[in-house]
Image (cartoon, rainbow, N blue to C red; front, top):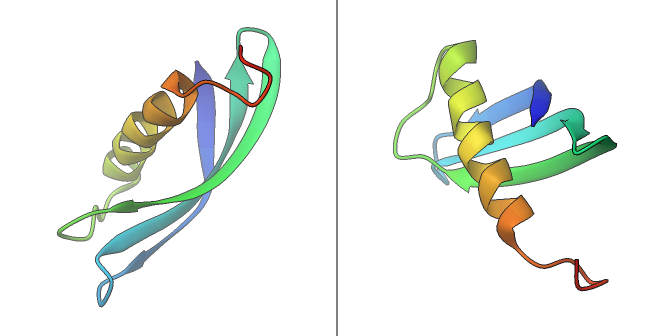
Length: 68
């Protein structure tokens, strides 16, 4: 899976990182907007990328509505 975090924002009150990522997985382009609970601000782009990677891996493990 190749992707790039296109936007991110950390909300310290809710302890959530809101992010948008676009990329390609198995030849299919995707854009995902999601949020992840983080106890502290990831701070650097590398850390934000790692947090998004974990979240996207979890999202793509779930079965889709089509059953694939």
